[in-house]
Length: 236
Ligand SMILES: [Fe+2]
Ligand SMILES: [Fe+2]
Image 1 (tube, protein in one colour):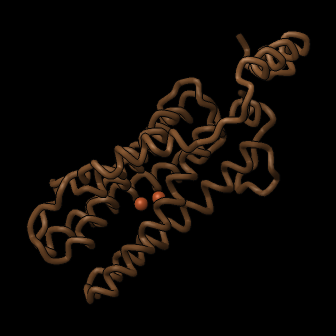
Image 2 (cartoon, helix red, strand yellow):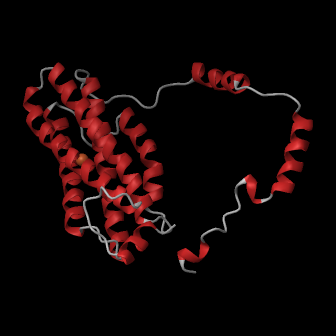
Image 3 (spheres, helix red, strand yellow):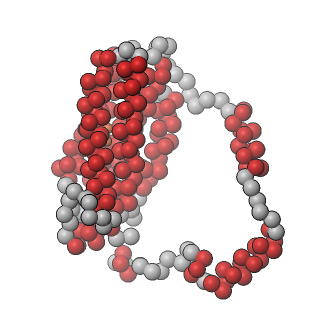
């Protein structure tokens, strides 16, 4: 079915059936009879939180633990970023999206380069870049939704770009944190490389945001699409 043929058949909203929704609301109101709150849920959560152990532990060396943990986190996220771009490039090849594939490939390669640079930085600090640090573990969990969207064959290029936009926001914030940490802890030799990575992330973020806005029909995007490409990129 052509995606445009599906427009207007979404019946998930309550207004799709006014008569039945009125009856349902009346019945629910009678059977529930009182407003709930989140206190019980919070109590259950709290009981788990107070008994919980932390996620993983840091490997050797014992100095620069916060920096090494955050380097591991960034490394995990940069690896995910590389895979997000790989998946988007495949999607754009499969449908004529109008996005610049060379530029996408350039950004993909930048993420892979950042990953390798972080491995070198961890090694230089005496760490093991193959160890999964606690924050790296959590970063993997955080990115799961983004990877899921990007690899969903039904996701439009616009929806994929929205996932990538969140990743690039995380990239920018992540490098800013790393630069501040390296500076505070006196690892000034890392700052030049990290600043270059941050500048590349800023470019990624600006361009991905422009592509995304173009894809949803805002006029501020950096690429000019044909009407057919616009249809391909934004059709739900
Ligand atoms: Fe990156
Ligand atoms: Fe990036």
